[in-house]
Length: 92
Image (tube, rainbow, N blue to C red; front, top):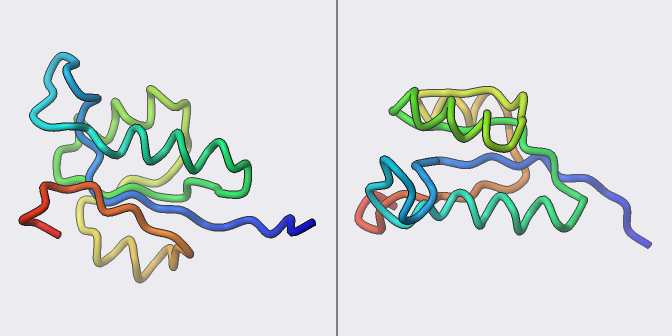
């Protein structure tokens, strides 16, 4: 059985769909839950220009992942194996 673990990062957190303060679908939330279910990923960092969105995301999932406001810095410093880009489609 493969027990390798992967370093995971999310670019764009937002609020969960239809929750207070949500401006979109909040895709970071189902992405995170899906990867967490595999029990083979460790969320090491998130990038979001909205500090409040990032703070709430980390609080909701009781995560100690690092928060970056610049995704390029996240990629260079954290070197994640997997990245979920959960921004509006035109920002991909």
